Image 1 (spheres, rainbow, N blue to C red):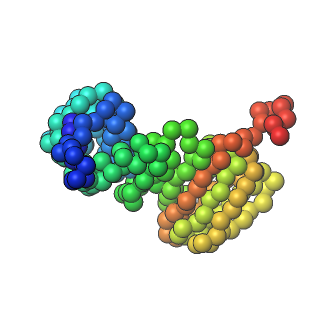
Image 2: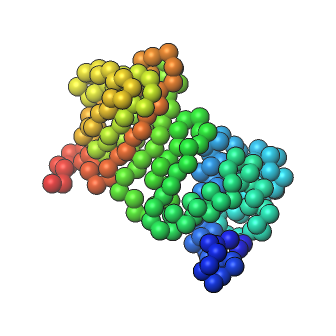
Image 3: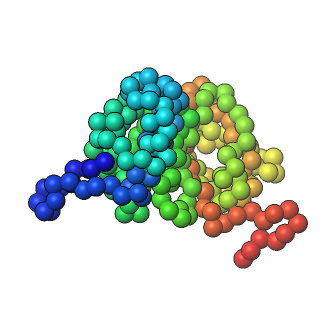
Length: 206
């Protein structure tokens, strides 16, 4: 696939390399999952075969530009945004556009050796459960973007956070979440992978 570049640089087109194709496939897979699409549903919406979509997401094929356009438009985005995401990831900056994910979306995927595992998370009304493993295993920060969140700690405390509130916790301290309101809770969370809870019977590394 060839991609348009800015005019005036002496080249009319720039051919994607293997790493660019991998980043493009990863971006499209993330968009598909955020939209709640299976490969079959995306194939039906785009007119592109499941096999072609699988190969595109794997980054193992050099697709035609019309094929990519059909897929990105079915995902509700544009070819310019897709190529922008590839350029950003290539430059060690990952840009995540606002998506339609029902349960949130990852924010760090695509950045090599990312220290922070970040994501937006959506909790349905009255939803309860343990925190996602990275946010329990590592030091983590979560901010409530909308709604009311009840946090349960390892010591049995219950802390209620409103919109705009946040918590910053050491590993294994926060163990449970609950949507304490009548509307969805939206969270912005990041786990610091450099700070990890020790395995049972071992002391933490200073």
